[in-house]
Image (cartoon, rainbow, N blue to C red; front, side, top):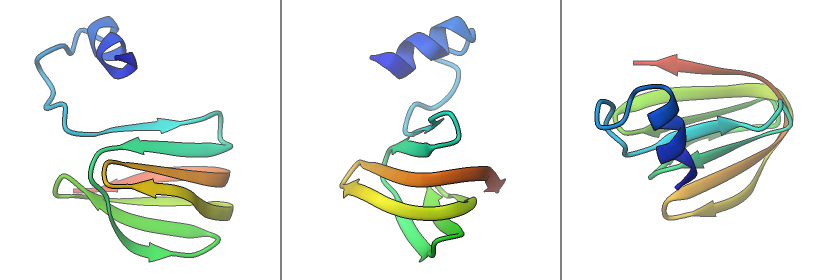
Length: 85
């Protein structure tokens, strides 16, 4: 899998719990692999919980494009991804 190869290249194979991954796609969208609990959704901020950690995705024209039981696709101009443990 794609994320396994990333972990291997970072020297993190078997070190980091592999229950979710977040990918910022060149500032044009975000892909999240894992179970997501959406708390807030607007065109400038999407707040969510993943694996007992809160995240805020900020930007412009944010839109949830696809949501499944184990993935989330967000489009828009991504300004930042904040982690709130």
